[in-house]
Image (cartoon, rainbow, N blue to C red):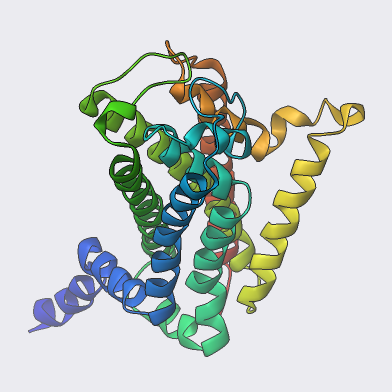
Amino acid sequence: MTATLDAAPVERWSVPFHRLYRAELRWIFRRPRTLIVLGLLALIPVIIGIGLTIAGDSAGGPSGGGGGDSLLPAAAGNALVLPLAALGFTLNLLLPLIAASSAGDALAGEASFGTLRGLMLAPVSRGRLLMMKASGVATFTLAATLLMAVVAMATGLVINGNGSLFTLSGNTLSFVDALGRVALAALWVTLQLWAVAAVALAISACTDHPMLVVVSMLAGVVVSSVLLLLSAVDWLHPFLLPRSWQAIADILRDPIPADQLGEGAIRAVCYIVIGLSLAYARLSTRDG
């Protein structure tokens, strides 16, 4: 009888992580504003593609050498450039804002409604709770990025056809190769968003106001972008997350230069590790 009573609490503390993960995904993707955000993100590449077609921009082809802004002219008549142009354009502000908002809802939003305390009192360790929230935010950002990339690719193919899949170097790609480059761009952008979300989770663990998380991350992105323009603080540039965001255009070159893309990926991983570590340090000492 004693052994049975002692075994019950142990079983309560071993809640399978996949159950927690599924519950978090249901909570995220059943919210109306989540569906609205995904719908608006899907509309952006469609609007860009139709707008460039109506404008009849003749700057397409191998021109365009920067990030999302300078890729937009090259997206006219090029079905391969449109997905990367849409991702690069929204990576400057909109996608980080959405990632920060999701991270703010994950912890600060729960705290503002009083449900975070119940989760912290549940038979789940603080580390697994943070992992559950971080996995939910990561899945949402991945879904948002992939949705935009898929819609942009489909829009480009509908407007320009299969014969318009050429790189900035002038080489024409097959559909499979083009799809691989779009997938690489989507995964690279997602990694950058995970870095933003990790820092946002660290802030979210310290406040009960999700809007404060969004404003803080928005200010961080804007200030970092301004600092990257100042040569007086060039010693600080390697530590700023947006430094390599313009490198998404390198995926459209032959061969693909890996220096800036690799540097941006390593920097994003460092931000993820630091952000999640700070979030866990705060969450492990938080009472409610």
